[in-house]
Length: 105
Image 1: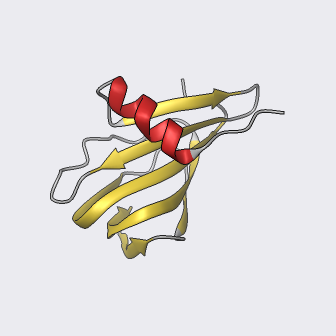
Image 2: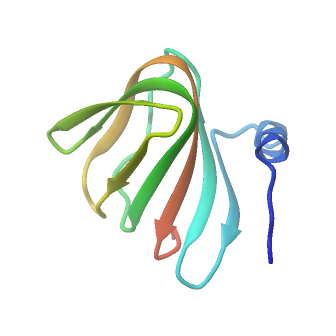
């Protein structure tokens, strides 16, 4: 078993000066913590893997393809591989768990 605490993951992410911290990688998936502060642009580009986002905290919008949804704590969004997507209009610092399948390359 592997167990994690969000506060420890956030501290590790900050110590590594990055917006994204991959903390679990297995044969069929990887999981990371993604952070975007209020007003900050989301620089990501489409991935070759399917993704699931679970918003842990914060508030903003997410556009996937041509659809836009408001996200906040508890929001879960699936993003198919290869589809353009971006968080925007971030009004409260976002902290997001990201599950990639297969593992992000």
